[in-house]
Image 1 (cartoon, rainbow, N blue to C red):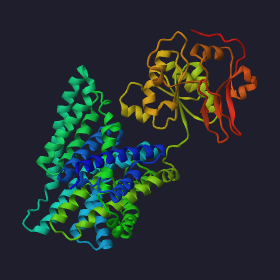
Image 2 (cartoon, rainbow, N blue to C red):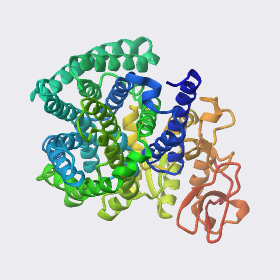
Image 3 (tube, rainbow, N blue to C red):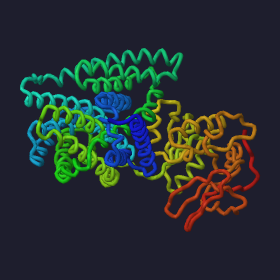
Image 4 (tube, one colour):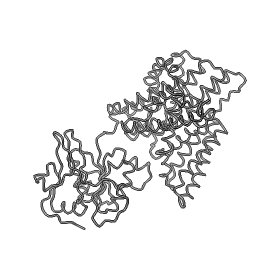
Length: 592
């Protein structure tokens, strides 16, 4: 029994480790789970204060159920039916039905042959390791940025397979317990009834949440996140009381239904991702991995890695071959999907819960379920986390990874800057709401589209997925400040730049939130456009202009990368670097 001080220290340590691991992972550009699992494991090995059973007792498994349900709800919010064409839709359906059963059977047989466990425990592990999960798949996809079709398939499969895998686990648990006790009735229809109950509760919960959010949107939009937490938690609780693990189905169904409607703005609900959900993922991974001891892992490590090899090289490719047969995915996209099946939080949570139930019933080999699952989860996350990007590039399905400049504005000055970036070898995209400006940009060979500012968070995140730097260059200082403020929240202040405001411009948002100033303090829109109209050119080395007559805009380094020169900072040049300059052929003729 832990003392009050030990419990306080344990809870504080779990939260600190969960957040610190995420911050470090972001700093080193890797999926957070790659650090969360070893951090939790080491914390559990070094101290007794972070063991979940000691901290929470019997309340731990219900806490995990609610946490995973909230995670699945948020993942469901990101699933849009309009991203699934008929061929893609059929592939997802096969992957979460036939593919799930093939995975269960393949892992169960491999576990039986490798570990020599009973068929009941082997089937239990097969059901547990069916799941993949959005907590690991979505971060990996954000790093890889694969083609839209394969990304849609993996997102939908990763989200929907979690509740289905959990229900298969409940069905397997029921069968094993029946075999162990003999007196507990086995219900083969449990899976269907759990799905039905979960979907029904999820639909009812979505309807109630829709009504609540509709009222709050008119009067108190700031309460949307709290109301959503209330409704989702209630749905999970009701569904779980009616049928074990039906709460996960209810949560995922609620998220998917809310995502399909267009009347309500779900941007505030998606604050889950940046606050509640990410914290939950970190805490759950730290706690569950802390419950596995080094001796348990050592006992199964060798055979566990053999099981991982079978799952990665045999089971997953077979599942994808069947699931994507006659789909819209080409061979390279199928190959990448076959190399993307990391296990996540639901596998860890169900392994923790079911192993305790089977051990309590005296089932032989039950104590090995959690250590084997831990080895599989950690090994697959590290394997796919380290190899997903190079494999995607090798197959030609990854984003290019090259910097992408987003220029907000389609006026002649913005087009001139965008054209210079393109000529220097950078990828460039323009946002402008003016059809005439888009046509002019297209005629100049520049990609241009309407600015999707003010849309829901998910759509904006998708639009900004590959963007590395933003240059806000419209003629309106107020719009520039507000656009920079919104984009800064997605990309960070260091990546968002805007033209210097006129001296008499009103303050639209606080200066620290507006983004950095482009090029020079006096290079306002009238000044820049006036120079361009007067014949100024943007070119490497200033196109013959002397250093005192030109404004440095970008540094073109020896590796071909381009860096913005912010106002008030001298260009930092290394060996082989050069400048892209705005020349000054004569006195500027500002236009207002």
